Structures are given as C-alpha cells and as structure tokens.
Length: 261
Image 1: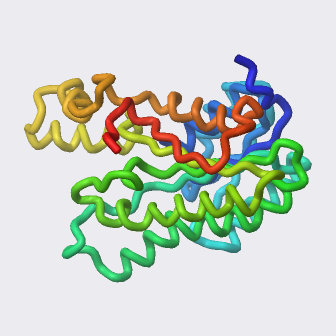
Image 2: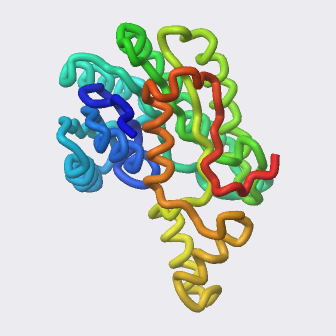
Image 3: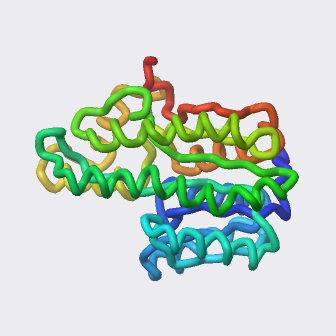
C-alpha cells in the first residue's frame, strides 16, 4: 500500500533507537524526508545511517535534548529550514526510571513530567504553525499501554503518560481540521531496552536463554510473541498518512492484544 508520504517532511523526536528510530525508518521507507534527534552524537550518527538506507528521501540528524525547550524549538526550526516545511511530527521519549511510588523522589516526578509531557508540549508549540501550513499536517505521539492499564513497578509511566493522552485529545479538537492528532500505545517490543532487561535477567540466572526471556515477556500476549519495533513504526506511518485521513483523536494500542480494557 502506497501511503502517499513521498516528498513529505517529518520530524521524529528521541529517535536514535527503539520505537522512535523504527518510526523514522518507516517514514523514510515511504519516501519522506526525515529529521531525527538524540542527545548522544555517536548513537545519532548510527541512526542516521539506518534511516538513510530505508528510502530515497533526505535525512537530517540533529543533536538535541528534548527536555530543553530552547533545543526543541531550534530542532523544529532547523528541520523546517532544511526541508522547506514540516508535514508530520512524531513525538517519542525514553521511558522514565522504574520504581514504586514509595521509592520515587519528588525530583524524579518533575524530571518524568519534563521528559514525557513537556517535551510534547514544546515540540507541538514549535511545530504547529508549520503543520497548519501543510496540506497533510499530522501529529502522532508514542506513549505506552500504561495509559490504559497500570504496570507494576512503573508508577512514573503509569501516572505521567496519561497527561499526554489528555493533551492529544485536546489537540485533536483544537488543531482540526488542518492537523490530525493521534497516539500509539505500544506494548512489549524487542527494543534495546527489552533486550537489556532480558540479558540482565539472563545474567542473574532467571532464564536459561535469551529466547526464554522473550517468551516470558510474551506470556500474556495473545499473539504469543513480542512485537518487532518496525510494526509500531508502520502504525505511526499509517496514522501520518492520508490513508488515515478520518482518524483523529485516537489512542491506538499496538500490543498484540495484551490490553484487556
């Protein structure tokens, strides 16, 4: 299916690895020009090469900290200047630290809010005028299934990410009809984070093999496997495309059916 994204300009935040990188690669595969960002320049250079291999569009890699509003604004400005506009914004962010409520410090709450919520606020404030000017303006926010069902030991993700869904729902009404806003709710995907967690558990003797660890992560998923990050990226690309032109204000789980709500 041709998603009609060839020649469009897209920006994906926090996109040097994991689901952000997969989203950038999926957009590039559809022919879009794609801007990516990350704090680590080495990881960013590697990601740039991966995205560039996916399609014939241009790739822009910008070192940026998404918890710094000035750097976010500069990132959007450089994207627009390089590509001549901006059609699609995808907001991604690394996960906050795991932990229980009783062990979480006040400072960690503020840091999680900047990472998960304010990064989206700053990016959309800077991008909105350009998305409105586009004939294809879209916003897709990558969150987590924790916005629907709390996950044990992830109090920051459970609590703070829900604000992003309220923000997206508001934007879907305020920005329409010029810009559509949606969210994806990823479940377990074989990202570097899950790979690290499985390997750590393997070192502790919790599993006999890496495959056993992945199987454990998939134990409550009806499709009986964890996701490939590109499957999430494909959902992001679809929501960014005109093929999803009547999808607005949706929070779409991409979790193999694990959510029961």
